[in-house]
Amino acid sequence: MDKLLYVAMSGAKETLRAQGANNHNIANASTTGFKADMTAFSSRAVSGPGFPSRVYATDSSLGSDLSPGPQVTTGNPLDIALNGPGFFAVQDAAGNEAYTRAGDLHVDPSGVLVTATGHAVLGDGGTITVPPASSITVGSDGTVSLVPLGQTPLATSNVGRIKLVNPPGDTVAAGADGLFRTRGGAPAETDAQTTLTSGVLESSNVNLASSMVNMIELARRFDLQIKALNTADNDGAAATKLLQSS
Image 1 (cartoon, rainbow, N blue to C red):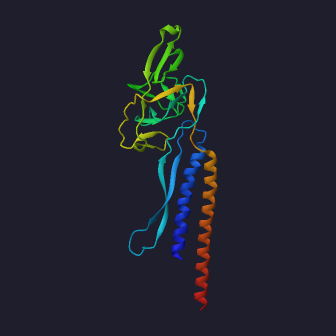
Image 2: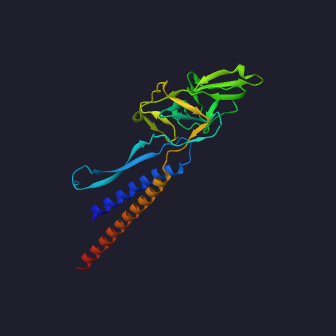
Image 3: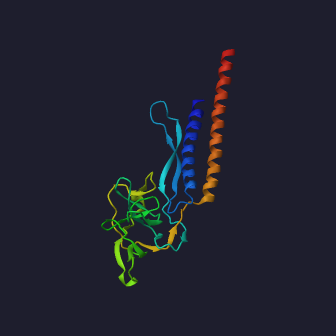
């Protein structure tokens, strides 16, 4: 009886974990530049004496799906989308370098180029400061150019270049804040082959239809495991009653 209880209990717990990751993907189906979390179930034997036949299910994270999401043309010169794999660098809340593909940028009141979530965009020499300008453009190599207020287009000047990187996918991991970082913590090298397009945003790569189907499947699996727990409880009560009567 305890085997049934253990299998059903561990399965229900891990199914809830998988449902949490799946729901997180669904909640971010419309988040710019979001990369879906990937999970998978696996079986593990319980170690230790007396447990040779105990096996429980675990829901393991496989990292993030780094495939590009669909691109949407906005016409906003400060909306950027990377062409192919890679990231652009930003400064996280702790002041460290992190990476993202969410390219909905703007200039904050202090003149710093930031993402929609307020993370300062990093260039070759740190954060990029943009003085008052009549127009701002971002080149394919990440160069930020502007025409100062009151000047003609002939007075265009560069104020910095967004740091573009392309580390191997297995060397980066997403954090709780949605930003990516290298697993060792060291800053990634600038990649001259990585380019971007201005006036375009990359949408989330979550497949909403697939995630909804997965949510229903996980809910049914959880319900089945709870029924198994109830069955084990009822069987145990019936066995106890039978022993007492005998």
